Length: 236
Image (cartoon, rainbow, N blue to C red; front, side, top):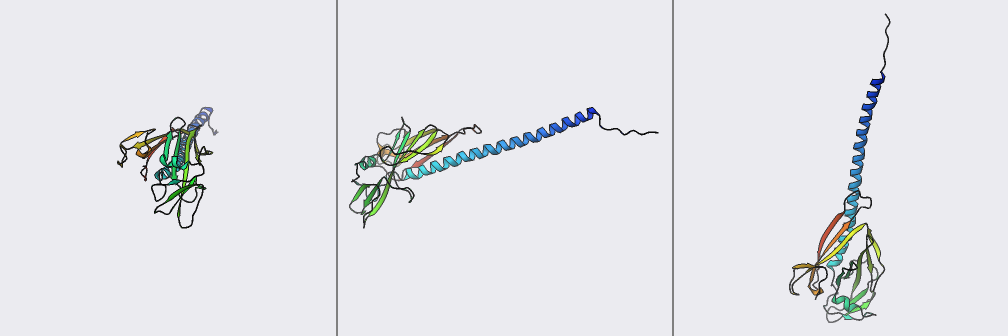
């Protein structure tokens, strides 16, 4: 008796190939989904880190707004006489041009050349000079004028008097807004309402910042971050 060995037929081979293809496609789909999730999470984390960097920097500077040394009255001896106006209104928001101006005590030693320096004996006299200044026997307080602006999906910052050159802080910004927490009177400590352009800067008690970032590749939805910073120094 003869015995014939039989292999796979065409139908069995096609079925095996189809099943293998289904398995491969399933594995590929899982891999692609995991990769997309990883990329989306990394993108969202990067956006959060950018927002954290910018907003924490601005909060630190806002808290120092209106700090001009150890005496309340400062004589303006700047070269162009521009310190006094900044002392009266050390924080403002230009809603038409989307510019936030802060006049703040320099935080740390990495701020570069100050816009002004207030030199005081902390007893009877305090004088503001343009740029860096030090006088023997007196204390120097570096003061900077910062301008944050929103333009062409970028948040920019400039330092100095007049219209300083702006440098890019972060890109892919779709919205930037500022509201001021305003008190009813100069004797009130807490804010009772919010306004984009308060008429009296002495009533400002806090600042609400809203920053919306977008992913240019549309891997995640726009993310909006909101923080509130209280002014440590009451504006009189």
